[in-house]
Image 1: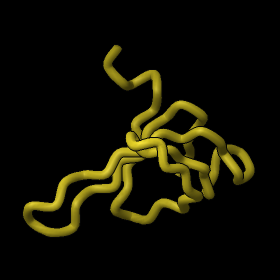
Image 2: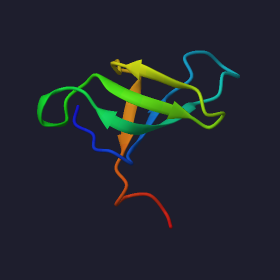
Image 3: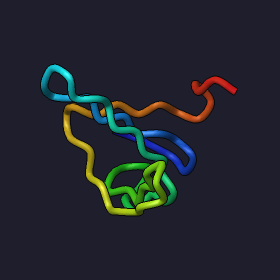
Image 4: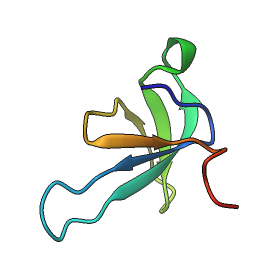
Length: 65
C-alpha cells in the first residue's frame, strides 16, 4: 500500500450497518509512501495508522473536485 499527503484512506465497515470510516493522510511516516501514516478524521482527531486489508487508498488525483 502506497499513499501520499492529501490522499484518503477508506476503512470499510466489517458488519452490516457499519459505515465506512474515511481519514485524510497528513504525513507519511514510512519509506517511499509505505505505512505508517499520520491521519486526520473529519472531526479533527489525528492518529497514527497502519492500514489493514480492509482499507483502500483513494489518491488525491482520483477524488472528485
